[in-house]
Image 1: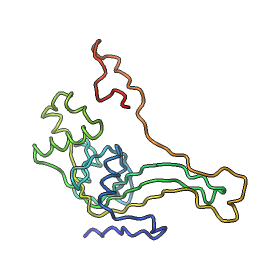
Image 2: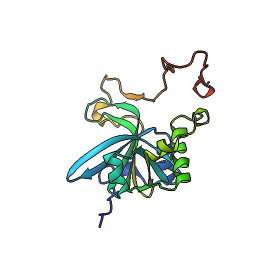
Image 3: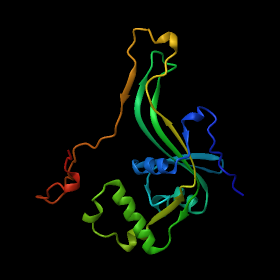
Image 4: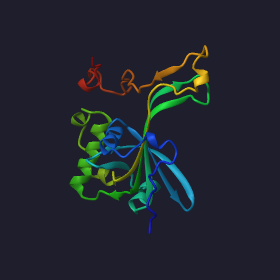
Length: 212
């Protein structure tokens, strides 16, 4: 019998949350997660793409992947998503920190075997990673779909932790002549780079054009 994950926050519990809407938002803003699992006493943490379908997380990988085989068999896992929103620079190293949003989801994933549901789930993943891309791609072949495992993890047992705001300096440090504040951080897409073997004359798709 699998032990139930303890989602209580013991350190800085005021930063914790059980808000399902916030959990959804954290996932929806992410393109990557880290999946932790344990095989024969050896822990592993693997980066993976993810997407959300309602109140479940979708993960995909090769059918020959050890990770996918173990997770599909019901191995407990922990999926973690973190957004680093800023560096919090206090007047001491001890009080310096980061602004962040972090989500840990616990449970056992299930394979999506129904052919139509599997294609729908894989399409959700593609569209989540780059909205607008799916409509331009050729349909996946049956061979490609069969070579891919799609897993579903319920967004049921989870823990959220959020750090935000300015530095919380010790009172005796506030009068020190040291700059203190927050350096906001944000992930941005760079300039698209065309494949060297692309057919000449293809213009940049609308979904890749800069937006005001």
